[in-house]
Length: 474
Image 1 (tube, rainbow, N blue to C red):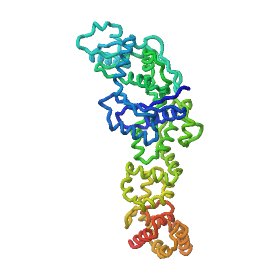
Image 2 (cartoon, one colour):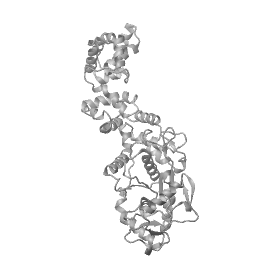
Image 3 (cartoon, rainbow, N blue to C red):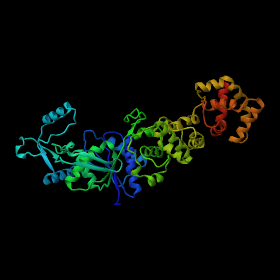
Image 4 (cartoon, rainbow, N blue to C red):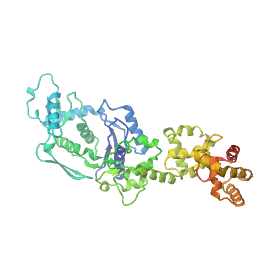
């Protein structure tokens, strides 16, 4: 195989959405699998809708996902002169022509097609006319002289053999009357000049592929290998919308997902490798193959993503997860507030609590929420359930335990547990009947990591202070 070159070519008219992220991932994996090159091209020819903020969002999103591209990101708009040069080449070879149809004439064609329930097709009225008949003062658009007979065939690596009747492919515009190139032309020229060997993109581009193939043929260029992957649908099978999860990658970051988990989830949307669910990055690269991409739309499932993210959080070493969490705090709800507590002592406290916290959290947002008790100010505000636990006999256990806990020598989970179990044995109460009020008084909630770990992480002074507050509130 020749050196594989893939590309991701987003339009900077909005955020990097989740479907685009998967397309980028598939291109990145295919290039890495074959020791090839993965390029980034920003398709910013739509000057009215393209924004610097969107470009930044795309670049930030790819960087967060760990999808590093090779070389500099390329601006399509910066290549306009090259696009015009190619159009001149097509005119000279007779594979393109000047079209002087007015906006009114085009609108008439559009209305006629709509009335007949057909898609808009240019009727070719300037295809064979002499330019000398052109109306004065009118700047022409340049159209491709498309093939009218036979078929255009795409041997697609995902969709298989796809055939388009040429009679259904009209003479598309290559250069608008104001001299700006169209998307259809720019894509072909850029892919050719960048040496792209494989185009991997959504199957909503299949018709575009047939039209672009005719541009390749008109220029005498070899077309890249194409692979059109099915789109992502919502859980109900409908086209993915914002309510399903068609959000920007930045939104998933703000929801507390780990980039490795999101990569793993996205690679499994439409691609399979036996029954294997979890892949390291190296395993993904080694296994990824276009032949294993299905033809049916995949369904986005937040529950499955959350479960996968929880798996990744539990599997991530504590020191690495702490680094990821701290780096993510500016983007997460409650993150900036937590960051204010992370001096050396606060960070050490969070690190000590992390093993217990990550067992109960599926996202970094849940992790931050669970860590709230570590830095809560006294006296704690108890939630409704915690208040009930304390009021229903819990405060008596706390009062009775206080002197025993104050007498504990070494403040470690085993030593604390021994003191609590001794009290349980003497009082005849079950361990749960004692642990629950302790949890409520120490965290303000009815759920938390293991209660002995909570006591140890908070430390002797803070733990006894919170318990005294609760006992005194009677």
